[in-house]
Image 1 (spheres, helix red, strand yellow):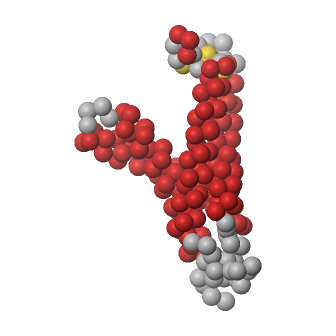
Image 2: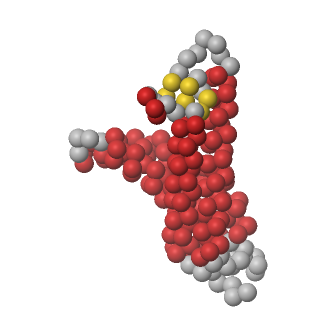
Image 3: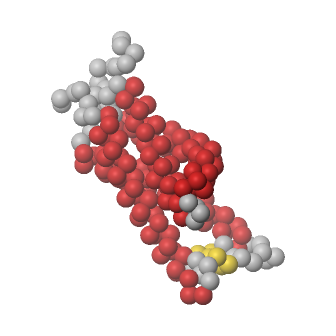
Length: 174
């Protein structure tokens, strides 16, 4: 049994699987960290890179943990057969939907717990754009969450296509 190709039923090697998981984690982090860091650095390029260092120190471990916990098992199963471009896009969207669902569930649970505390008062946003009051999302907050989730899933689809390009079509013809 070959270490690079543990069984005859896999279309991709273990090395390609690891590269797919790691590349998806890095690209996922990059697609979130760059826009946030660019928005925070009004002074210029030097400040942008300073923020990116902190974004890497905090965000990269989170990205790799999430990718190995959520993406790796799914990719391990998927990469037994050749992955088409369409399958890559569909599963990239599905994996990012799972990550978004976990994040939303945790956030809404925390908001619900905050709403139960009578001594707590909080408000995110102002004027007509209040997103959250005492941990509970407003209609505008739900719209904002839906838009951010749709963008996150679209980014996941693009990342999955880049990863599919990087790992290639696989070596099994059936």
